[in-house]
Amino acid sequence: MSTMLYSPPVFFVFFLLVAILIYMVLMRFTEEGQPHATKHQPYTGGQDFPTPEVELSYQAFFRIGLLFGILHVSTLVLSLLPLNLNLLHTSLLYLLGILVSAIILVQPQHRDE
Image (cartoon, rainbow, N blue to C red):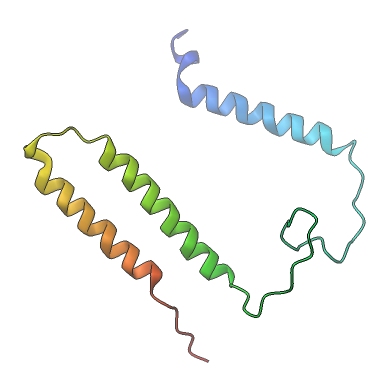
């Protein structure tokens, strides 16, 4: 019974409840923010940049983020593979899957309007 208390799922639930409790307590002391015209603009370090001619949609940001995640996780997985020839075919198949995923994600989206 005592070893179950040290298991990761129990710790996760415990700290999740602690975080929710802290959030709820601190929300009682916060003030409501005033609406501001530049509230939803990206942070630029105080510099005024001209507005871009093209704004990316949320779908484009999602695709870029997914591509970023796939490439970084796949780099981590491939770098941790042992260097023996038994895994060569598996590694090449994994790289082919990554290549197909990356090609799909960089294709421009066509909207049917």
